[in-house]
Each structure stands twice: as C-alpha cells, then as structure tokens.
Length: 500
Ligand SMILES: Cc1cc2nc3c(=O)[nH]c(=O)nc-3n(C[C@H](O)[C@H](O)[C@H](O)COP(=O)(O)OP(=O)(O)OC[C@H]3O[C@@H](n4cnc5c(N)ncnc54)[C@H](O)[C@@H]3O)c2cc1C
Image (cartoon, rainbow, N blue to C red; front, side, top):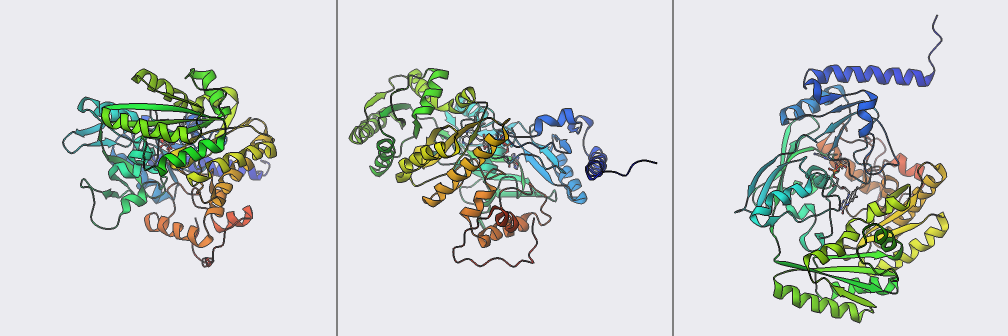
C-alpha cells in the first residue's frame, strides 16, 4: 500500500491536476505552439524586473489574435483561473509576476503597428509594440511618441498603459495618461471593451483615465491609439554640479518656480554619478555632491532664451560648474549616464531594488538626507537618481538576493523610503506601479476605507477577481498583519464585504 501523502505532495498533485485541466481546456482554443507549461519553458516568465520575487505560472499562453485572447480569458473565467497579463516583463514592482495557480497571458506576439496618421498625429498600435518602435515608425513624418521610459527599447505600450509609465521627458509632455487617446481590450470574461476614442475627449465617464495605471487588474489591453508630437527642431542640455544636495534640490524647485517647464530635469547623487561614470564615461563631475541635467527643446530661439534663463537660475542656486551641450552628440553623451543608471548599478552590486516614490519638489534634499541615515540603519548602500522636476525618486538600494538577511534589510529599507515619502507629503509610486512590491506601504498611504473603494472598482470590472489578483490593493488582513493602517477619520468597511 502507498504511504499517505504529505501535505506538500498533496499540494503539488492538486497543482498538476489543475495544470492538466487548464492545458486541456486551452488546447481546444490555441494552436500547439501558443501554449507552454513545462517548467523549463515557463521559468523565463517567473519574474519581471523585480527579480527578488519569483513564481512559475501553471501555464503560459501566447495568443496571436484578439479572438484567441478572448478565448483564453473566457476559458480561464469558466474554470475560475487567475490570469496575469504580461508585456515585456520589464516592470519593476512585480506586476507581471505570475500567480502560482494561474495562467500568464503573454502579449508578446501583438507587435504590429497598425496605422500612423500624420494628419491627426496619432498611431494605432498593438499592445506588444515596444515603446521606442512607435517613435521609430513615426520618425519619417518628423513625429514621435513623447513618454520615454528608460526601458523604452524593450517595454511595450500595453505595459506602459498598465503602469501609466513616465520618463525623462514627461515633465513637459505628460505621462502615458496624457498621450493615449484610446485603449481597446477584453474584460476578465473575454468580452471586448473600449475606453476613450479617436477624438480628444470621449463621451461618458472618463474610464480611460481609470484603466491607465490599473496594472492589468481591470482589463487586458490589445490595441492602443497614441498621440504623436512633432520632433522639436533643437534640444540642448545643461549639466550643473552642486557641492551640496540641498542646494541641488532647491535649484530644482527654483527652476520650476521661475515658470520654466524644462523638457527634462533629472538629478543624480554622488554614488550614482560614480557608478555611471565608470560605466559609460559621460563626463560627469565626480566631485559634485549632486548633478542636475536640465533640458530645453523647441525652436532655436526658444531654446537659446530658455537655456539662458535656466543657467541664471542654476547659478543663482549655487551651481559650482555648468556645461551646456553644443552638439547633438554631446547632448546624447550627457544623457547616456542618466539613461544607464540602472545597468550601472547592476555592475556594482549583485542585485538592486529600485524604489519609485514621489515627494513634493521642495522636500528633495530632506528625503536624500533621510536616505543617507537609512543607509547606516540598514547597513546597505543606496544610489539615487530621480526625475527631479516631477519629484519622482528612484533610490536604488544595493543588496545581494542570495543573502536572506540582506534581502530582508533591503525590504525594510525600501518600505522606510516609501513611508517617509508619504510622511513628507508624497506617494508610494510615481510610475513603476504598486505590483507586489509596495502592497504593504499602500496600508500607510491609504485608509482601509479607501483601499476598499479601490476593491469596489476592481469588482465592478472583474467580479470574480481573476485579473492579476493579490496585487496593488492590500486587503484588511494584510494591513493588520503588517501592523500599519492609516486612519484619517475613515470608517472601516463592513467586514462581510467580499474580498479578493
Ligand atoms: C532598466 C529599466 C528602466 C526603467 N525605466 C522606467 C522609466 O523611466 N519610467 C517608467 O515608468 N518605468 C520604467 N521602468 C519600468 C518598466 O519598464 C515599465 O513599467 C513598463 O511600462 C513595463 O512594460 P512591460 O511591457 O515590460 O510590462 P510588464 O512588466 O510585462 O507588465 C507590467 C504590468 O502591466 C501589466 N500588463 C502588461 N501588458 C498588459 C496588457 N496588454 N494588458 C493589461 N495589462 C498588461 C502586467 O500585468 C503588469 O501588471 C524601467 C524598467 C527597467 C528594467
């Protein structure tokens, strides 16, 4: 007679039964090459850019048509199987991390640019098109797609829509939200759905704004209409050094206060400039406590006038050195360091965790100084690069994921940064999303009642709770276990309400 099963054996048997059931059901809907479930094939999907957390999915589906996307969703809905949409997997908050009992729905094959319309200055693209590919396709018409995440060579527009992604030029041109007109996709039940329209404003409630940034929890995007903008005639960049982070932070606030909206306004601290300089040799001032990159674009006259005004403000704020790019090559060289900040951090540490909180611009120096204290407290190094003009921080905490204690200290360090940002009047995420990474800190940002309202929106779109469950919004139980739940006079929601 066989020995009784241990709980672990029992669990994995149940899992493999579930896997067989899902595979059989999806085989009826998809061609053989569009379905993978063996461990060696599904392992590449086990994480996104937040590599500290991994989970293999039961099955990966790679549909090629909208009809197949609908069929996958309908099938999973019928079986009660969670579905996690995935673009390029460059997300930094674990948003595309698979569900242990779910299907990962890869949209990688939706990579066609359907239309570039230079008259209406729009492009219609499938969700798996890379961000940079849109600008490349629009270039012959002297147009481009403005939001430019540093991952733009790889990340998809579907992922950008889900995260409401930003980038260096979003200070002037707006985030994904401000550059998308229409999103087409499918509900958790596999029904087609459209948000927005071809005109600047669509009738009815602004559900487009709701779905942009919803991290794959409300619908699966298959097609997006984006705005295109004319390429500026000229762009020039100022690189300014400061001997003190407070002066650099105050300079950022002073530029904006002077009524200037630079095309980009980025800041790096000394550890960050040292890491990137060693990697790309961008010519950064290694003695500076912080450097600012401040860009102007427009006509030659506009740029000359704005560069003059920005230089004056930076000098008045105590810049110790100022260089202005004199050619496109030199401008690209200035930016090469900033654009390579993440890989440069990967060169000096086995792992890094990139945080993404926001703070009011005037608190930039305060948070940097607080982070310096946290480095001592958690005994870990941190390099800082930020979209300073937007007050969006990207502290990169360096650690070794193979050392459980370092990973734990890194998590505490990260949570401390997020929650200190909230205490300074900011938010836990500027552009990378909440995913799994910031779930606990959402308890500090929002009251239980506010989180419950977000669950209410989720339930309105996805009553069975199958799209990307367990992410973004913390449950009451999670906040109770975390031991922190902000109360701002909000009443706790009724305990009998259904939970996801
Ligand atoms: C080196 C580096 C630099 C980065 N720089 C920036 C930056 O400057 N600015 C910035 O904002 N981000 C940045 N990121 C983060 C990341 O690239 C963005 O969040 C990007 O939008 C993710 O796109 P993706 O296609 O890789 O999505 P994924 O990582 O695959 O998925 C991200 C989320 O979107 C959902 N999703 C993906 N596709 C769909 C779809 N079709 N329908 C519904 N939901 C979907 C997923 O479920 C998940 O929740 C950077 C990442 C790296 C690694």
